[in-house]
Length: 153
Image (cartoon, rainbow, N blue to C red; front, top):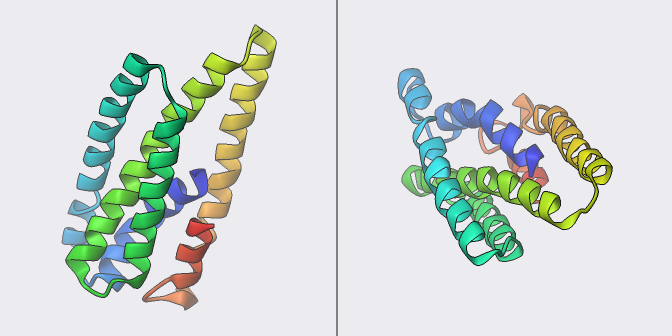
């Protein structure tokens, strides 16, 4: 998930400019609404997860939502539909992180084990950031299909 989060964060303005053909100022401005959507989705799912004490259905749903968004972004040719795909990707990936960390914390007993697992999740997120910064290459412009395929995987 972190690979997708970082890849989209680093390259969303580039995708909006080169693939969806928005101007520079518009691309920067249009980078914010998907994160607002992700924040709202994250808050609702956090409340639902706590109310029903279920995390795995939320994780599965978010993963499917993010995958659908990447597929829309990769194979649709209409800029508005592709922008909608960015919303799905941002909402699905950003909402999964707190859910995964909460799930891990609730299911592992012992402070040392919890600390180690939390550190492993955060550390793998850092590695995901390194990989995410490398999957969208300039020679793949304007569609960036190899980067999108890497995000699907």
